Length: 591
Image (cartoon, rainbow, N blue to C red; front, side, top):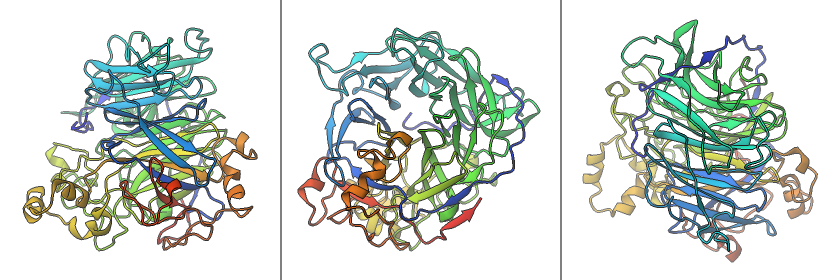
């Protein structure tokens, strides 16, 4: 919900635990980008669109190439034109009743195989939901563009829903030969999932995934997990479902929480908790993320107890794991959150997340909390604050390359506040910072390009002046000091916006191997556009890269750039060519 109290204390538990074998001691290498690394372009939604994107989700229809972006009650259709380089984007509001009226949590998911998108708006005890097979466009047979969906099965819960289309374990002629829809949710002390064999028209009875492990007011008494979970994903190989959770225990050590996946090989009939043995859990909610590649390898990204962004992989449904590695190490990130994962061909995956070099202060329990009044990651550095990062692997996690996609333009200044009302978390953030909520999202298109859907909290004056104003003042003190500012100026200056942005891969190796040598694939895009010269990364200080990519100054927040060409102004307005950028850090770090 938009003002939900994080549920690290409102935990959940249950399910059968399998003992986890020790991971093999082989550490992955994490580096910053080099020449030839994938390059990216960011597209801000045009004025009046996606202005409430605090909790965005993104879906790509592989059949049409259309992208759908959910920004609270608004569903936007985005069309990319790859006949020009860099591609341009046009945005269109395709919201329709009943999913544009009321919500406590917005979320959509697109079935890349069939092209169906389900839009859900949390409205207890279930969700208001509808699906479209036409990217939200009206058709002769469906003038509304959407059809009502059941959203969930009997016995579902009322918060933090996740919806997913994936491979079915058994043949399913009702919707697709091997496709199935999922709906999962939680209610403080329990999580449930249900499946739909009709593509969302109707869902079966909800089944428990895990229940409360009993540490809200006393020591844990049963095996289980904390309340909130991340977004469910399924294996494209065998249909196994993975529901990630940031804090689960095990039968041998009820008191120790670790990140985990809760796994079902049989479409939700049974579930098993699989901990990451070297993982540590943050003491506040931070949704982990999981996806599975074409080789049936799962990638779990999570925030650790020290607020580092970690990733581990498994090839046996979580029975064993590779050692966790810190994806923010090349940039010295001491604080990271909101991981999201997408996987492609065997051995290929990408993780996007928000991070900052500033270390969060400890709360009264001795745990780092970035939502405290005393947390100010900006200092005197105009480029500091929170940035959007992307880590990619092409060798099954043996090595990762991490890129700062917003090197000179913060996504957020000050805290990313989870809105906790628990006294032990320390003083709340010094401003009304529930502008960035629980997650960002990631997807790939039919050619393997990576697309990240996120919300920009720092625009206009915040970018240039925010680091001088985000001092540790209470919200009331800031209002008094800045009484001459309009509400919009105040929100911009203090990083309280939530404007929708899509950052899309422009060229470089994608996540689908079959498009590595295909002209329309991302790997050959820059080669064609630059006459055979691969795109070079930017210099460490953020200077213009040697291979020209844009003909206008970068802009953010929908504000036009001086001298911007008409092509770049189409729809979303090109904001930033984030060309494998590095910033003030050594090029390689061993994890």
